[in-house]
Structure formats: C-alpha cells, structure tokens
Amino acid sequence: MYEDIPRYDWSLKLILGAVLAGTFTAGIVLLFVDVAGGLTMLGVTLLYALLFYFVAPRRYQIFNTKVRIVLGWPFGMDIPLSTIKEVNPASRRDTFGYWGIRLATSSNGAMEIVRTKGWNVVISPSNREVFLERLNQSLKAVQGSQ
Image 1 (cartoon, rainbow, N blue to C red):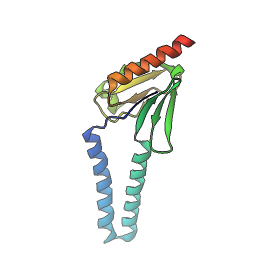
Image 2 (image 1 turned 60 degrees about the vertical axis):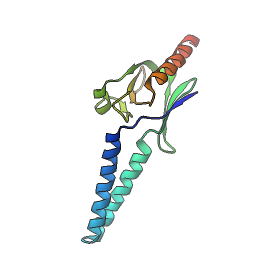
Image 3 (image 1 turned 180 degrees about the vertical axis):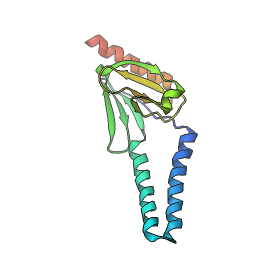
C-alpha cells in the first residue's frame, strides 16, 4: 500500500476561508437586525463547513486492487485498478474545469485517472511523480495477472 496526502493551493484555502468568514460575518451582523435571517446565515455557514469537510480529499491510497480517495469521514471513493485505462499528468486547465470527477485541490501537480468504466477523475497528490510511479507499478501487476 502507498499513501499520499493532497496538495492544497493557498488560493483554494483563501477562497474557502473567505466563504466561511463571509457567511459567518453576515450571520453575526444580521442577528442585530433580523434574528431569523442571522440564524439562517449561521446555519448556512455550518452547512458550508460540513460540505467542505465531507467533500475535500484527505488522502489518496493505492492498494493491490484499487485506488482509494479518502474524503471526510465516513466518505471515500474506490477506483478498481481493473477499470483504469491510463494515468496522465493533468493540465492546469483540468483542475478548474473538467468533464468528470474533479477532486484536485491544487493546479500544480494534478493528475488524471482515465477509466474504461465510470467517470474519469482528476486528483492532486502532494508528490505526483512518486504517486504516478507507484500507481503504474500496481497497474502493471494487475494487468499482468489478468
């Protein structure tokens, strides 16, 4: 098994922090004007925080039979190695707009997992070269045994 953590751009952290700070500040200000509106905005802040927690990748793991993308507990995504066609470095453009599942948290070092069955996935491990090497080794082992 090999495990890597996602790389997070400072700009993504800034955007997520600004969204949470903006809705939280609006909720506090609205509490003095309209209590129901203020409580609603604080509820929206909590909803966004939970959404960011559950959707943001925590770890990328390579097993003998699958790649697992660990999200906020209890969620995760398993990609069977048998469904992976190829793995390529992704362009910066693919990290912002992509037809597939976009779990990339950084425009630097993103990679695309092209699948034969299911949606293609874009991720951004912190050490793309080592991750690609290990994943390609696992793919060769699985393809050799078939």
